[in-house]
Length: 143
Image (cartoon, rainbow, N blue to C red; front, top):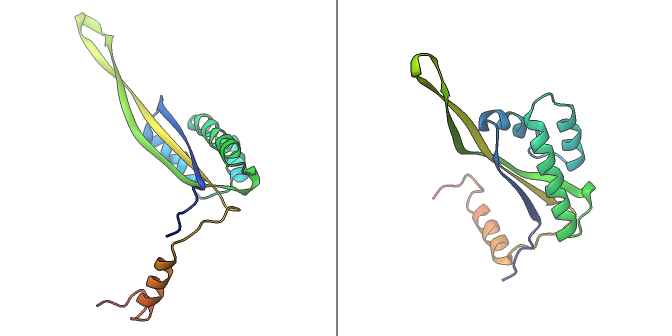
């Protein structure tokens, strides 16, 4: 059995002070693109989330070049996800001794880059199994 090489490197930003919905709007634009194209897109987009995501993409590329010796021209954004973090809650004083809650949402952003020049090894039994399944009627053959 042959193991796969680890070709995906991550950068994780936690407790970033913005809504996960607003960060997803930017993340959806860069998922699956090359590293250089992603940097250009993030520099030109007018959203506040772009700066935090730009730093994470840059950090993921630095991790890939340091840990695997990858060239930045061969990197693509293979995984980009945004999860909701904790909500910072404060109380704002209002008239007549009352208070009003202020909720500041945070999010966790994960950027994964993959080097397309590195070969991934596959298990040979999986190749034979997929050929065997296709002979029964292809992908859509149901038994």
